[in-house]
Image (cartoon, rainbow, N blue to C red):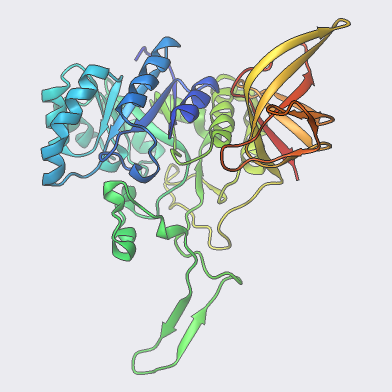
Length: 412
């Protein structure tokens, strides 16, 4: 990577999410393959779609990183050479790995593909960085427990190593994601990509003194207690500090998140990287218009990550309702109208207040006065998502063409 080139790296759960992230400012995406990714249950990629993803990204001068970051057992090691041979033909820009055994196989079967060390390897000091550098690693995705002062010292001691750091998204309650609750409760291992997130569950908590039968129930609120529910990471205000510290890639968490989440978070962080004076406004957008569990700076400032024990998550008044999948411009009496084809994700009604979020995180505010069903061509009063998602036509007055992948939200 060229010196001083700051990369925004986004998750991709499927092709539509990938295209949305790239069009909203991500410079690269990371995605998983079957059996070897830490998001195996929500991964919609196979090798055919991985090839499509790589071709699409490269056609617009962007990158794709493939995760192979499980902690492997012998049965994985026996299967993985076949997968690596296919990936070697597809030539993603990097492979993300945490297991030393898989790393050695990558060097054997994919000798020209860059290797990024996963945050799962919990690399948090400069001696570990030097070790991995000798093993052929090109980039370190630092452990989330790494502080700002740690990052500065690591960069000073290892100036040639690329450093990547998570700046936004869900936090795991366990050290570097090494959690065993899911395996213990339902026999789905977080370390093999199959976590059911027991840390987000509601718990009834009881105290029982030794030698006594009486139990005391501890309840924080009417639905139970959220003892393990970490707040989400949000480091938008520390982007300048992280750049000065030596981070060249800012990573967003969320392969299971929606296209709405990706559009907003990628658009907001890209704008924050390019326009530092907008950070206060952009921070409020993240807080008030994106579903979140409350925000924390994690371990960056040397503090512990904060838990949200009050409730599961915050639900904003603004709701994702659609995405632009096609567009044309109509000119009438020197006025320009965008004829938008919208895939509906939640209900939309005539009279709704709507914001259209554009890829550079510009916002068009409007009100739905008329809409048509794509199939019947008839005017309708409301439309609904779910299932395949209804498609509608909206006309929006605008001097410029509203891009594909733009997302719409309505005020409830």
